[in-house]
Amino acid sequence: MAASVIGTLGDRFATVRADLARACAAAGREPQDVRLIAVSKLQPLEAIVEAVQAGQIDFGENYAQELRDKSAALGPTVRWHFIGPLQRNKVNLVAGRVSLIHSVDNLDLVAALAGRVTRLRETDPTLIQDCLIEVNVGDEAQKAGCAPSDLAAILDAIAAAGGVLRCRGLMCLPPQVDDPEAARPYFRKLRELQQTASQIARPHVELRELSMGMSHDFPVAVGEGATLVRVGTALFGARPAR
Image (tube, rainbow, N blue to C red):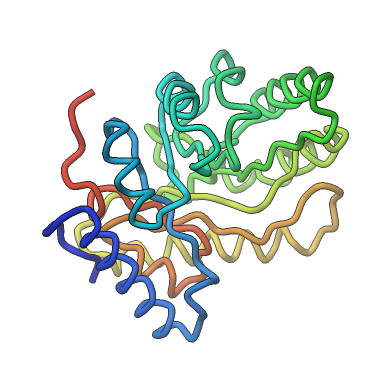
């Protein structure tokens, strides 16, 4: 079971890391094979600094403006991940600022990101934006993510983007369920999509990452192959209102 929200922030990070290590052991995996992304959206800078002092490096943000401001304030001490839905008109605030975009889900967004990174390469020729494809594994109309049937076309577009983008894997946000075990079929579906898509060789596509699992269900996600887990409440407590 995922950690409950007790103790100091440092205590909570230690507890979640211990839970993550146990989940890895139960799945026959090494702890270093799964990276903890601390979901810091709406959390104050002070909380992120305290988390960094507790040894955390990777942080996930959902809102483009908030990411821009936090990354400007904290600089290279943090490895940023953009995990929320990304609108095309916000691409300039995200591309080039983050280690990984988890939420690419349509062809227009691929084109916008490729255009932005191409412009940024005028001053940084080595820049490549890593990303994941978000898949709507639960077929929920209200959620972002591409349909599984659209995944191949998006991967093809990234492969054809001239090397300015690189797809590292897939991400999902399954339907909200009370029982973590009820999320297992959705995590398994994402893993199966990863395995199927990996059978086709594409340039600039390396489907090694599975971003799945949050505070209440990350042990289940680890059992199904997660390499990135996105944990917020179990680390920071209740999220402040936006």
